[in-house]
Length: 295
Image (cartoon, rainbow, N blue to C red; front, side, top):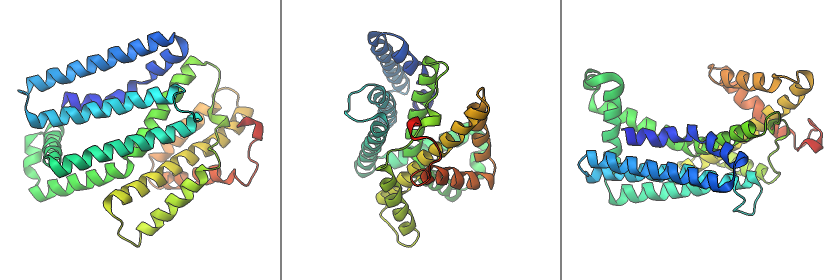
């Protein structure tokens, strides 16, 4: 369980690596990444050994190491100019590549391994840790399976989006810490080609309401559409941030971000914000909401 949680918690600690990249020598950046990666690998092997080198646990360790590689590898490709694209395009390419790799590994695990049984067993262990054995015993096997299936579908529909958001968020806050007094949010604009991404994924999302798409295609459509909503939502926040910075030079953008986060947690309000902010971002293609030099 500790091994599994390390893969989930690592993304929230990538900011120091980004700060190190922009403030220190590149040798220090790679030394820090190598040290962290080696330490996590040693930790996983130790925990696997404590489990008696159980093959089933080994599958879980391998999946978690893949997750760690995707986080740290994605960060390297995002901050380094390895790919000949602007950073926004690099983020989309990295996210799609991570989704394809994860999908292939999961497909192989389901076809030739016991990945589904192992994941369900881990779900039982999570329930036991959260609610105790008494809570688990009160749930019937059918209820536990239904809850597990709902969780898998919910995660599958948003897992790629969370990867993109957390990776980009770590880069952004690391960049802010290393460039005090500067901000990128008020000038953020998605490139024109991304509008086609959004429109096509939206068409697929509407099609899924009437046609049963294959499971893999359905997950791809949902994640692509959600990525578009998030990115244009950020662009909408950027529009508001630009004007707030002119009215309240100090703290206006921070207050706006905090208000948006709180609104997304309020039922009813989150739906309104989730429609208005992306709509504001998309409207910039036809309306002049900020001077073009801010891009």
